[in-house]
Image (cartoon, rainbow, N blue to C red):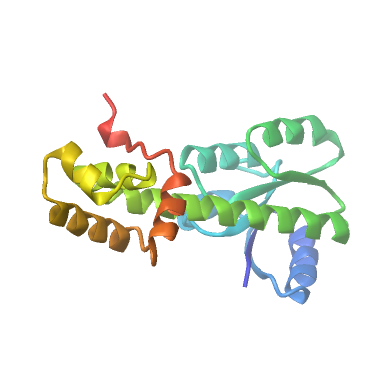
Length: 202
């Protein structure tokens, strides 16, 4: 079940949204304190944050900035009042998937959440792939790059001055760590990444 975080200090707004969303089988978590949301929620999950711009303490812009700093996989939908449209547009330029104006209508809300969940799922899958790739050893990353480039085991062995059997062992470990059930799945996963690990940069 999809998870929606409602981050808004307005109880009337969160109660109305919860009633609507739970009726549509969304799982809803309400946060009236934006600082608690930032402190307690994992930034790496599939979900949407409905984020009010104006809140006491940590406002919506600051929360969004923190999520961006963490490279969170959560999608952000900005919730605004009439005077905050320009601010909401700015947040969209910084990565928010949509903005909704209070009072929130059902149709645009559902559309924004569907778009946000698709975006979040894509980002989470990329994040998980990058984590798996980062867990490879330097030699395994070399083998992974060669496999993604379509090189045969023999060609990889010749290029790295190692035995074909050694290449096969490394390739099997790459497939296991990348959780790939087939060569095609492995290549597809590798092609979704830049294949550049930050630890290897000068």
